[in-house]
Image 1: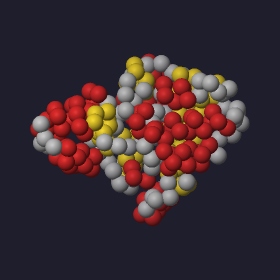
Image 2: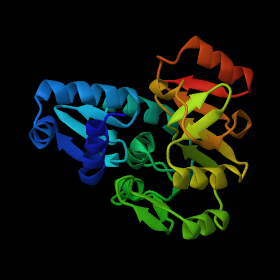
Image 3: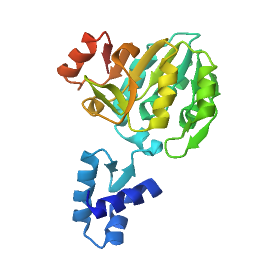
Amino acid sequence: MKERHRLILDRVEEKGKVSIQDLALQFAVSGVTIRKDLVELEKLNYLTRTHGYAVSLNDLSERVSSNFSTKEAMAKRALGLLCEGDTVFIEAGSSNAHLAREIGRSGLDVTVITPCVYVANELKNCHQEVVLIGGVLQKRSECLVGPLTHLCINNINFNKVFIGIDGYSPEHGFTGRDVMRAENIRLAIEKRVQNFVIAESAKFGKLYPYNVAKHGDIDTIITDRHLSTEFVGSLTGQGVKVLTA
């Protein structure tokens, strides 16, 4: 990786969101050069670009706004999988934040358990009961992690789990870029209740370092209609139901 690329990533991770103009001034290069740098870094899944800015992939508020209509459609599809009286564990992530918003709008009588501050805030003015479990706050992901979070997950009951992923491959299953969040997910799915993944089709075919779940751990995938037939076949062949929005 180029030294400038490393410095750009450091700056973006520090600030969460940095304009192309500011990066060009900082590194004394043109805006065109910075845009080319950001395209390369985005292809490698180090950051994302939006409206003249480079955005950290850990900045949840920015990710909630990206691909808004797709995530909203997936969340509405996922809402149909809930029943009155469910106790639902909702992990962190932008698609799960949309699901929380749809739950609040629906008036459905469910209890939501979450390690994500953003998810809890989506429901703070709604009638559903919300249990925000404790832990150490990852500020950009707004997710609580660590031993206290693990203790809470192990000692609380729920009948449905909704998780997010960063990648999927037929060989490795579902993977993530954050080891702490991956551990939260692993503990939740070990309850062996109904486990659901909400993920955009663009995440399929990508591989990240940390194992999140195997095929046999997941009951249903909720994704968009652009998921390739190759991945649909791989998932259904392993007994995973695929729903598209």
